[in-house]
Length: 455
Image 1 (cartoon, helix red, strand yellow):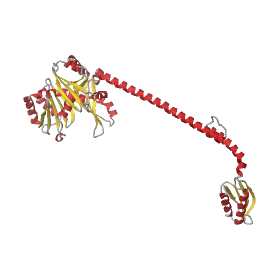
Image 2 (cartoon, one colour; image 1 turned 180 degrees about the vertical axis):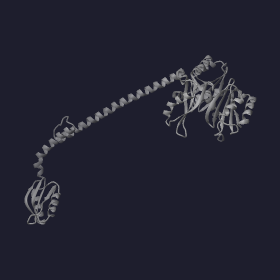
Image 3 (cartoon, one colour; image 1 turned 135 degrees about the vertical axis):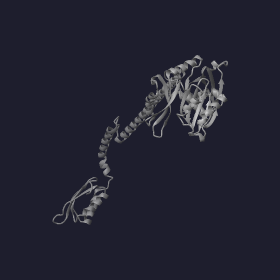
Image 4 (spheres, one colour; image 1 turned 45 degrees about the vertical axis):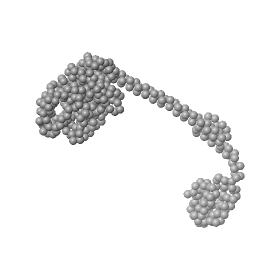
């Protein structure tokens, strides 16, 4: 069943529940306001009934003999995979081809073993078509065709809630209609299954009960609904026979004759875990089809609007980035031209840096003599070198000195004497590299100091 239906239901404010019990039409109008639901019985013979039905959602029902439910369990822990195999599992359970049926899966839940369990709701297509035709003949066009057993069960929970002491008890809702009898069975609040019967016979109900619980095996909560529940003698007779073997408490709902119609309209206004609509597939009501199409169009327009927004946002971002890039290029050209002393034009990146580097190198060479005037005089450094030689016993053979380079050769009185000179040169800003060789016959150590690092 489509999820669109449940979304549509949540927006309903009023609807009609229609129970066609034999030839008798039972109609209940339900309205939702401020979280409350009010019901009123509508008689088809009332003036204006047909006009009132126009434009208001009508809810019909397939009896427990025209439809049925089955619990299925898929050997998967993922709901998506389980939904793919449920139709195959359901096909095995059916006495007729699955392709001749309309079905849906609801109340998906994870079992203690981690598998996915769901309730399958099924009806043959021809039974759905027949129900629609029958209601059409009475000038009714149901938007939703609910399942009787589920409607009886959920409304039974609403009107006769499960008490704390009854959470584990077998719970049986018996609907005594004019033309048929239906039974919904569960335990505590959990639905198990529903069955249709031909007559209001205690023996037949008792045989059904044995498939769920042996006599005297525990208490049973009995709930009576339907037009037959207004007959106190009938209820007394059935209850007396059943409670002889299945003892328990019993309750009759208020206004039992319109209970099923009330259940249908309530379920339409309040979608829940066991909601369903067997008027689906090719038999989907045109109003639902239009609503689905409208929702699809809305989704398409939403996606289109989102796409347009993204395109506009993309163009805006591209424009911002372009402006920032242009500003960066202008700043780069301005700085490059300022450093290089001339306009570097459209040169960018490494090419622009290379142009500036070449120009600044040339300017540096031109200004080198001028800059040397501001450096310390070389004769002071020569004096420092000479004084250090006298102090640590160094004899110089050659000395070549500029502000950037130095080259000294000579001999030292011992192996460590040269280290002092290297320290002095470092303080003067020279990266001195020291090379020493083995001592000669006079026991002096030859050395060479050049620009570079020390070893």
